[in-house]
Amino acid sequence: MLSVAPAGDRGSARGASGGEMKLLKLEAMRGFAALYVVLHHVVPHDLTFQGIEVGHLFRFGQEAVILFFLVSGFVINYSYTMGRDKSFGLYFFNRATRIYIPLLVIYVMGYAIECFRVAGLADPKLKDLLLNVLMLQDMAALKPNVIVSSYMHNTPLWSLSYEWWFYMLFFPIVTIIKTPRTAGYLVFGLSIAAALLYVVWPTFAPRLLMYMAIWWAGAHLAQAYMDKAGRIGLKDFLAPVAAIGTICAVLAVDNLLHRAAGGALTFGVHPFLELRHFAFSLVVLVGAYVWMKARWVLFDRVFGLFALAAPISYSVYISHKYLVANATYLAFLNSPILEFVLYSAVMVAFCIALEIYFYPWVRRALRPMVFRQAAESQSASGRNTG
Image 1 (tube, helix red, strand yellow):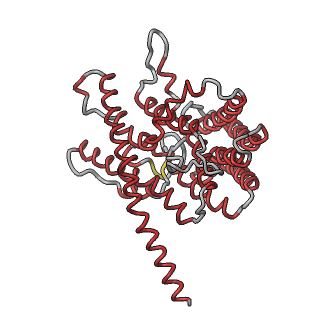
Image 2: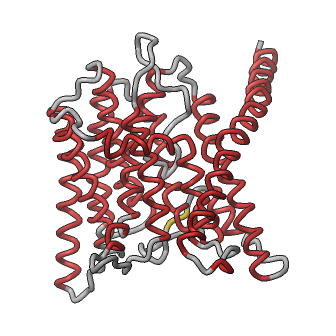
């Protein structure tokens, strides 16, 4: 989903009865989306094979990110609702460690590669780094009024700012508004209002709130999944489809006005890019409902194996630009296919080490330190006020 950012922690998918709740289809989509983004950045978009323009099949990396958003919203709501501890401290710790531990490693990697490129100490671009750590990055080449580009040219990191702020908005919304349906209506309403604002003031805040409708569509369906023991019905799809459809209409009108004023419409650039994102999310929702009614026929055969990549999908997403797409250290082989295979093997080994071993180890080391300090602080506060 989605990342893209990581959709949730391993081991969180437990059913209400204590049994294992199989969310393998979501895992498969996470793995598929991550691997598709890799191919999007590696396969030339003008590649032809026996007269067939194969490269066109891999032009939709942005859509893979939208798929991540939908999956992420579902899994975050599911794991939070099914968890026992609803405290912000634990929620923030889980989300922050999940995002930042692997990401900080990638920041270091990006700077090291830049130093190697310039054969010396490169400018660390501390301001850009700080703004990226604060999750304010986006793609300046494709959207207007971007605060900062992704650190050290790692363009896929643009989506992490959206994911992070979706996480941070999710908690106060579900904490303050106890009724999930009301929370959903609020988010969808805010997203539509943000879309109306965005067409006249295309900046970070309204763009973020507009896109939250996509992420919350996943959260909305997760709520229905839990409330109805996995039986999601047509009525459960209506609210997100209506909201996203309305935003599509707003963006479509904006595109028409832009065109009427003499502006160009380009497939991968504002303002058509945003319409493309929302139209795709609408297609996914409608397609998911139709496929669900067809009992997911052929799903496992088509996507099932991609679940194997899910445990490292986040690391693949944030590292592939360096380790595969822009890698050159095997260029002497003069065989693009062999180079791709070897670069991919290095990436998989790196991601297993980072996400399966390093990240959990650091997280386990941090958790007692963080929560011991919090407990001691609360105890001291109690003594001072007692």
